[in-house]
Image 1 (cartoon, one colour):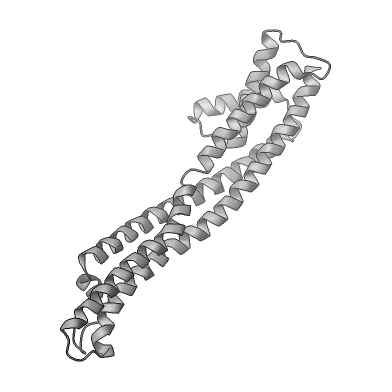
Image 2 (cartoon, helix red, strand yellow; image 1 turned 180 degrees about the horizontal axis):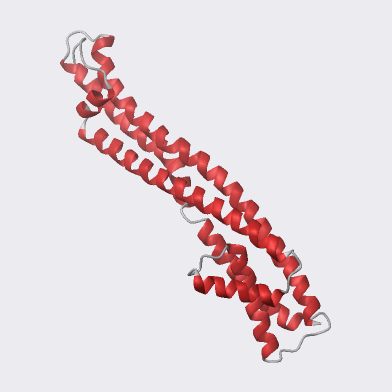
Length: 232
């Protein structure tokens, strides 16, 4: 290390120790995966919100439920399950309700016979949809919480190597120490670069998914009331 040492990022990364370079490579790979999931989840949530809005508009337009169910099933077969999450929840409940009526399942005074089966089917479909929407969120949370510590590990290791190298120097100056410390601090910078977008995306998407979950649960309760009146 000399006072005229090159302090550009590429030079510092190329001259870092093998372990620090491995840490940087790991963080860059994790960051690339994180950004991939961030964009995929952004489009998935946006699409789910639009499909939910469209189906709610159709459902509350006052049309016949059996006709809406037939349209949902035919659309799913035609477009290979391209229907929205709320539409699939509706389809599961209506399908179970129609099966119960077809086999002559009796309802009590509150119409709880066919209704309970339809409610269970909708709750099962709801859980499947929520699992799909929440996929990869745990990865973003892990990246956001672990990446700074991984980068800090690379920084600590690099600083240790920098100070060990000072043992062979007669006179230590800032220009002598700066390159080694700068190499080490890049690992922390990359760790923060990977963590911050992941944390922001996780918090935002968790909020959006919670709002969709509330809409799904509200629909299940409202649709159950409609089925209860029909069962009576």
